[in-house]
Image (cartoon, rainbow, N blue to C red; front, side, top):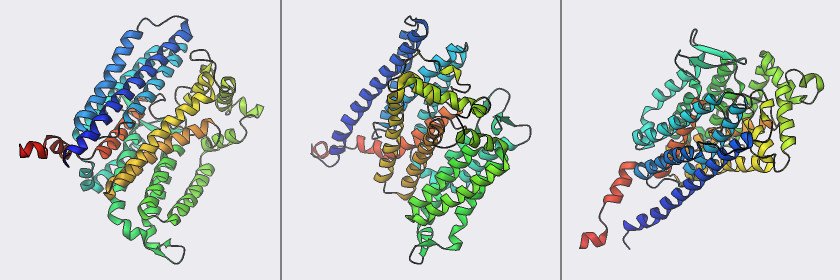
Length: 451
């Protein structure tokens, strides 16, 4: 066996494993859609065959794109994402039909296709993630502009006390979703270039030198700017949390992690004192079952708990519960809808799927030898993991609720597209440069060369 032919023998089973996993994910997604429709009407949906063909066709097309442009990619990331997207689409269909707005479910299906197209486009355009390392400050500036775009007069739109949306007339979106991805790329490039300087500590505890605290203070200030100007606790938490984790991984210094947590606690307390809607959410979190709170600001959180209690361990069955009693069940509380109809076992299974994404992302980071690739994989994985923790922790009442969508599952087109791009970057990082992989596949083996 030649040295060049050996990798080919390893990659073939990886491709078959990935296709089999995609087919299983499509089958489970179509089954969830059919069961939701039968639970609502008692009859098999007329369009289930069309839905199955369309969903499977798009999913397999995405898998083919991976085989074509990222041949040696991780075989688990994409099928897991397909399953999460399919389960989320089935639940959104059930919720929107029950509320008399099936067109909203169709809209989310279109956004899922747009997300898939963005996934493929990212794989085609970004042949090597290390190309991004050459545009450190340009990418950082673009990310900062997108983060702050909602505060521009006449462009930003305030919803539920937070100014996160940009309304361009024909489309409304959250630019911060793309901004966070660009900030992660910027941080991966910046920290990979300065990791040795930042890792230099002082004293037995290895505390960072005062002059090296600048990036941490700047990130803290940026998160406070997002908090004060956009009034979004969730976005501020994600931005600062991702930065602290990436600095910790880059330097290996626990002191950065401790200082980051202390600064976040100070910022959260400042936000609590400054904004009434943050105080309302904290009070609802602390006194969710108080009758006075339930009747007012704690109504949604209480209904989410009632839904989880109704579902118990195994749930009421798909389409058999009453999750639409929760006001924002399609966005903030979709996890409670799964809890009512699939029970705690279903919620645990859903969270385990996210754990698979996080685990594979961290494995990609461990396998990379290039500092930029390693930090990029860590940052993107942390972005996904923190987002799931923030929304799941809020629904389960571990932390105060923030308006962060559950990736690939909650209502929201911008979030679906942004998550698809995150997954594309992870897939590209795991596969390595496309042109190098193409040369390896086309290179003759020793037997062919000798013959």
